[in-house]
Image 1: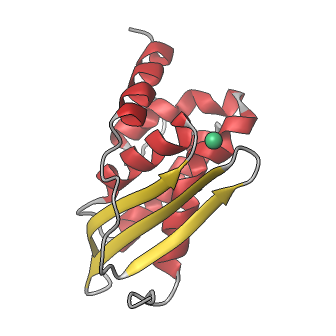
Image 2: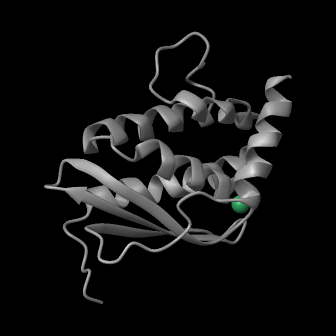
Length: 149
Ligand code: ZN
């Protein structure tokens, strides 16, 4: 199977059955992501233990197959990671999306997320794939979210 075929299969699978597709209440951190170019609109929820370890991660919202599958894979990938590890993955993922990180040559901690490597050839899709990561990063940087609403 080519990387492109694998990519399409994984995207379709996560779009059909998104993982961690629900709200976490209460959660310690959350953030909204909106991509006006495509209409993707997501919320990312994180629950951190003592501001260090991401014990739970989820998302909700609507968007295209790429934004949803990216969020589905991200939430699965960052669960159990420390805040620092998640932020490293976030910057590696940005480099992957822009073609600066070559997953077969450069060291990285992205695991299965490397299937997004071909996306830099489609600039309009890069924002879709990056949306949930920007939201996650924003949620981590924000002071404790207001969980009482
Ligand atoms: Zn999109």
